Amino acid sequence: MTEEKNGLVLRGHVGIGPGVRGVALSAADDFSARYDLDRDRGVVSRPQHKLYGENYIGKILVLNAAKGGVASAWMLRDMVLAGKAPLALLLNNANPVMAQGAAFADLPFIDRFETDITQAIRTGDVVYVDPTNGCVRIEQKV
Amino acid sequence: MADGAHGEAARWGIEYQQRVGAFFDAEDFAPIRVVHVSTDRETMGDTGVAFIRELVDMAPEQRRPRAFAVADFRGFDEETFKFLLPGRDLAAQSEEAVAALAQLGVSTSHAYVNDHSVTAPAFGEACGYSGTPSVIYMNGLVGARCNFEAGPSSLAAFFTGRVPRYGFHLDDSRRATHAYRLDFNPNNVAEWGAVGAIIGRKLNSYWSVPALEIPDKSAAVLSLNHMALNLASYGSIAMFHVIGVTPEARDWTDAFGGPAPTPEVLTQADVDEFLDSWGGTGEKLDVVALSTPQLTITELVEIAALLDGNRVHSDTALLVYAPREIKAAAERIGVAQQIEAAGGRMVHGHDFFATFAKEIRESHNWDRLMTHSVKVANICAGYGYRPRPASIEQCVKSAIAGKVLP
Image 1 (cartoon, rainbow over the protein chains, first blue to last red):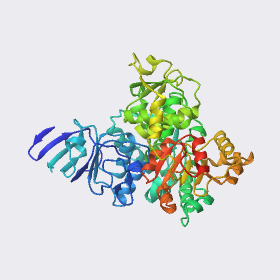
Image 2 (image 1 turned 135 degrees about the vertical axis):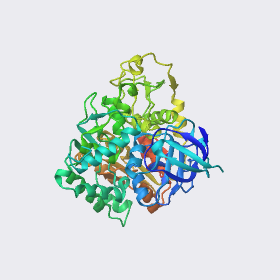
Image 3 (image 1 turned 135 degrees about the horizontal axis):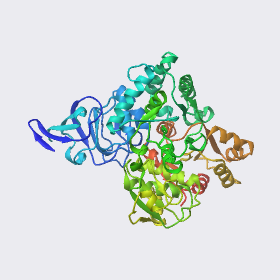
Image 4 (image 1 turned 90 degrees about the vertical axis):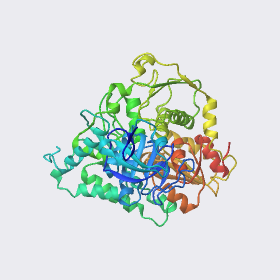
């Protein structure tokens, strides 16, 4: 983590998709489009999930690890085309499915940060996601 | 390939694979012969079907295959879906996608976990499999080499004849990272599934590789499959070893590529605690879904025997999923008729969780679900059900009683 002129910068691995700016929705929990989401309503639908009931559409979704099966790869693009997707996805640890889904959907996605991303970014923070350079800048803390 | 000289589909595929490969620092590609494309209709969505139509609309020379591909699309059991989701013509939607895949040259299978029905890759062979149960099966039990290659990713491999070489294509990634020992023999596939779920939750990383010592090295492939697919479901795990059983784990040293750590012991109490944690004992039971993987003929025989002389409770639906070919085999020996005469519904051609389970719940106002598949419990909890995993025997007896039996 480095403090720069425009905010705190968190470095991860080079990611996928275009750069975007948005408001974070963050929790120390995992992510699967199939297991956790009501994709029609755009809310987290698994009762045990720490973001249960939260609307993720247009948010920078910040979670721990990708979980579950191959469904997310088709689903992320379907969600993007339906206008019911997060604006970007940040995980501590991806699996291939999530990277393949992000590449298929052109959804901004970064993982493998130098610090626990779910602790560094809090819900409500305004962040800039820069997949090309593999970094996230926290521009405004809640 | 990237300049389009091998056709537009290959150009798309290689560009896509380069993006994914760069994400995981792949240095090159591994050639593949066999591809498995995951194409559940629900998962693909209308946009996925439209994407395949776009590929079909290319001139044949622009979309020439470079691998053999099988899809587990399977279609819908038209008769059963008149009950499960009345008013929706899912069979027609299914046919549209199956036809498009066929035009690409992708053969379609009616099995779900097709590791039991499609010729497997050989030991050490790179492949492009899609379904997570199939991938972990290929890596762990067959010794083939594969990452999760999700639907679009395996389609890319179909056109390029290769996959990015990272993860479980590399020797170092395949070695065990964590050691476990079972001090009991699981009694049924639900308990084997629970073992996979417990380890999966503990590790929770695609890059973790558990090695497991079990007391009975003659454990059935189906049992190990239930364990494996729940490692994948609960932990996104794609590789595992069973000491003295799987091909890259002749012993602990073989599995770890050196000295192994002291294994963590899992007990019967751990498994009981996991299964009991889902609750529901004594509650009204709305639906029993026996699927994932679809059932074998021996499981159908077991269900028919449990139903003999009994009848499924009028407030409970008993859904028994089998591949179309297995259902036909069960009909030939009278087992399917026995199940249906007792009030069960034989379902072919698809799987419960992957075919609009949320909409089915809403359509029937279902709440409490029982299943022998710990994976179904995991997924359907996100679809608003209150699941309870248990043995096939416990599930069927509960269906007869109309409530969750202990």
